[in-house]
Length: 218
Image (cartoon, rainbow, N blue to C red; front, side, top):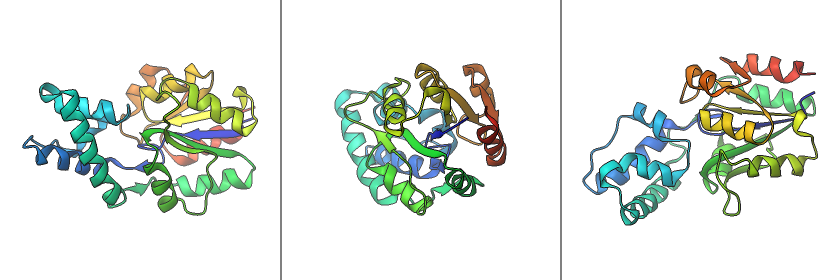
């Protein structure tokens, strides 16, 4: 029986792509670099901001430029992270049903931690995630399993009672590294093929399909 469902954030419970792309493109154009189409960011995001800076700077990358870009991105994103960000269909209803069934929920993301409660509070103001974490200073980023293992301990459940839900190969590796089953969502940034190749235990196309998996696991 599933007692804890832990979610990724970007591409899983929050469609953040347009706001992320706009913020990074702001930092790029400020330095005279060409911006990228929004769709390109599907492959850029998911491994933390430092990796994101490396991805977009390419041959222009230096540690100093990346830090300057990161500062500009963070300042812009702090004021604009909810301009176009929205929930995915059916997620609010799913969270309410899980709550009604006594199933705990968490969010663990590689996004800078300061932005996570801001986004969750806007999209799901009536729901409480335990925990709702972004990148923690004392924990390595996904796919290192430490954050998920810590969240499992906080909720007092066994690994066999946990399902992690995400949209990328990083999420699959994160869950499996922690000894937890993972459900990939095809509506996210990466799509079903990447999830299948990464070895996701389940892949769903809708929140209703995810509900069935959660409620019907023995």
